[in-house]
Amino acid sequence: MKSYEAKESIAELLEFPKDIMLDTSKVVMIGNLQIFIENHKGIIEYTEKKMRISTRYGILAIEGEKLHLKSISSDEIAINGKIERLIFST
Image (cartoon, helix red, strand yellow):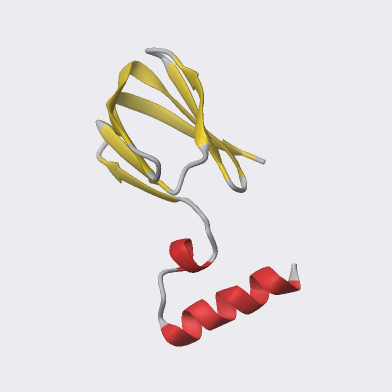
């Protein structure tokens, strides 16, 4: 864990974005209609009511209605629909 703490300190000192320096995911929501997940590790589950996305530190579950992928690339996923709940589990 010391490696993580050292990287975090360096990121703060040099003012680098932590999500890039620490290889963590960044989640951005626009209201409850759209969500972007950067630096993901893949889709585990995909239905209209629930999507589960793998990240380096756990699983992000998105629950709602009429969920669908707007776009996907090797480093970003955009999901549209009525987002009702986010659950992060390790």
